[in-house]
Length: 161
Image (cartoon, rainbow, N blue to C red; front, top):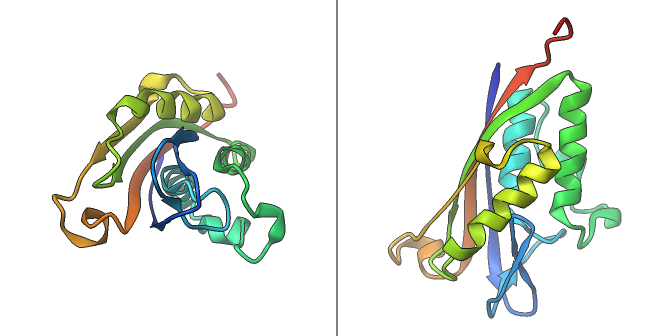
């Protein structure tokens, strides 16, 4: 078994859609980034890559590569999933937390979990997504950005099974 952690953060800006876990969330601002800036999916990808000591998403999807401009992060997650499968590993589970003062995210979490589970070809009960505020402290508490942390557990595929 291998475990990895991931973290991502993006600034909230006007004129962008807010996408978390592949879900478009109605809000007056969205996250600034080269791709769709989905901090949750980015943190999960970094956790998966970190579990196998493969670097981070910037290594595979650099922000100076226009082929990734505005791309759906779930497509990038699929590429990371395929990479870990090529290395002979399966995802056992993901646990993650999104830190955002606003918007309230509780009603979107099940859809986020479904999206992530579908890409990783695992059951939804193996994908944990939580959301919390930061009690109006720091840049997330002041609605300047959103961040996410994730942990991923991978297991080497048993070729003899």
